[in-house]
Picture 1 (cartoon, protein in one colour):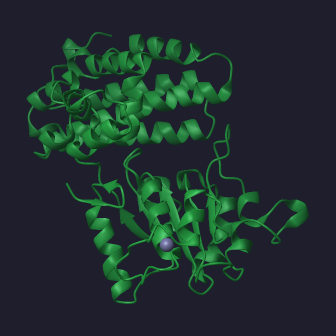
Picture 2 (cartoon, rainbow, N blue to C red; picture 1 turned 90 degrees about the vertical axis):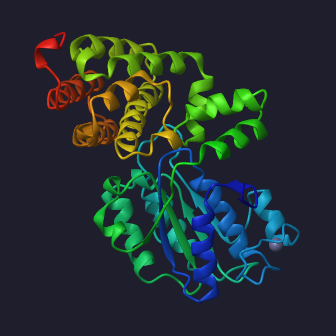
Amino acid sequence: MNMWHGIYGHERVVDYFRRSLASGRLGSSYLFLGPPGVGKFTFARKLAQALLCLNSAESPLEPCGQCDSCRLMDSSGHPDLNLIGLPEGKNRLPVELFVGDRDHRHQEGLCHDIALRPRLSRRRVAIIDDADHLNTESANSLLKTLEEPPRGAILILIGTSRSRQLPTILSRAQVVPFDPLPTDAIAALLQNLEIASDPSHASTMAARCAGSLSRAYELADPELCDLEQRLATQMLPAAFDSVRLAAELIAVVNQAGKDAYARRQRLRAVLQMASMLFRSILRGACGAAEEHADPECKAVKGWLELGPAVENCALAALDRCLEAEEQLDRNANQATLIECWLDDLAEVFSRVPAFDARATIR
Ligand SMILES: [Zn+2]
């Protein structure tokens, strides 16, 4: 299997950056988009290392791993690299990260730092993780930097889907899509990270990960694993009981206790599991099931048995799950969110071809 400096499965993106560098067409603002847990952040850091390396001639995109710049990269304290992401417990990227707090407006923050002369390398790089969580104020503070980036500077934003980005950001950054990881890459990672005990355990787990390493961590958590099984059995048009499932999921969120952050994370995990399920169904309906879907997943199997015409319904269900995740970020009441989300899914499921609505258990 091909690997670029410890990164599996994204050769297409490596090639893209190699060609951009070789032709002198490296852009200044990129938006990495792809499902959670496929290595976008790891890739961004490695790319930053390659672009900041003092020995690399740049065109081959090969960081030396030896120079002062590469060594600082490993200790995560490089003077020419800005890294920002969602602060713990927050669900928005605060504007202060970009332009400094009220007392130091435009005297600190990412937009200020990236305009400074590089201290060690020949350019500065900034990585903005969790770009799904940029609000209008934060995005606006970044627009000028995106439009007129300082010479040589490179900004990399990382998000999960186009629909979650503000149009002002989308129109100013080059989108670099990241695919789910191939199953053999996931299996190799599971072994390297010692999440799987042996090659056969690694491949069984990898088959259930839908191309996402973060899902492997979820599957390793018995509670989340059990929850996923329950979702998979119930997310079938013929077995769907939105009222019963809502009560179950509200209880699941309540088990996370009173802490708002923990509750939100629990519900986020549920919504992401559902999104992943509908993505797998969509891929299956397009004939790509073998690569990423769990072959044993009851919901995927059940949906695909209904024929290729389920595609539109699976897409509508996926859209509704992504919308629910946005509502969660906007601090919607969680019980209401769950009930409305499942009611809407019931409506979507009732449109599945060849599905007899009388069979619904309501
Ligand atoms: Zn180096």
